[in-house]
Length: 355
Image (cartoon, rainbow, N blue to C red; front, side):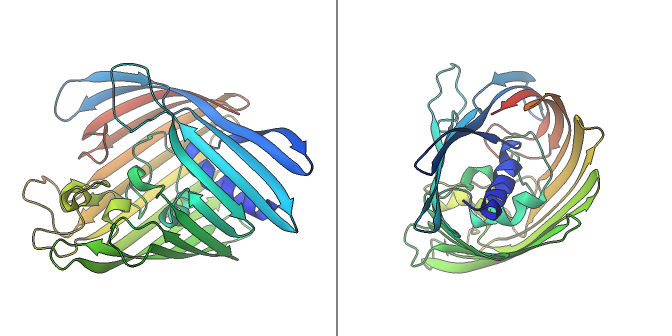
């Protein structure tokens, strides 16, 4: 894998896995083998808007990956597989958690094929700030839903700052893949900007399907030890990836209602979202982040109390030893946005060792 491609992958993975590293374990006939991942222990104090206070502790987010890099007839070839222990993402009362496939892809030069981040993720996550909430990543952006960040199959092609993504369609009878096209521009000063458009067939339940499209803008401004992140999007057919729709929180599922992409008449529901965040490095060991995000649907069901979920995250992360971080985060949301994340406040304490 070239240095440029390694950097692109590192930026993407770091945005979602708190800067996971890789340890090279050997080289055979020009092929390099590496392992990576992290062990994360977290404790979450829950103060929901409805119901009793509670405390949840887990190490399920810990993950392990394996990477093979080689040069074959002048081409850079990479195979990457990663799993964590969230099983089917349900909450259980015991500690027996099955390993879940997160990534499994092949990259040949600028072409990536397999199960990995979707195009919406690459258009926004590298321009966001670091948060600890495993179920709140990206709320307010076009990739705000952690439930569908990895379609069953994705094809990415990059050239310069352009990225074209063709994704396994959510609508099983779609005649074409879901599509994302984006362009990223970076400056020598460390600033970065992205514009992306999405398009996909959306199941309506009335006229079979309609075509939904959306546009997203994201950017990050770097001012030495401080950076400012901003993003915004608007459009139709992006409810599942952004995490909000006609019936409130949207997630992939067998029914149209669970995805929340159409109203009771079968018309597409549009959403508009934005996020803003500030990161600051106080010392070489201490950094902090503040983030706000919201999504508004132009129409919601009568059973939905609010058409605009709002999420705020504030955290401090201290590097106690190289690759060992200790962090605390306070967060607040006014509505359920993902499983295990109801409306209300949470405080998370975590320790993460990356390897």
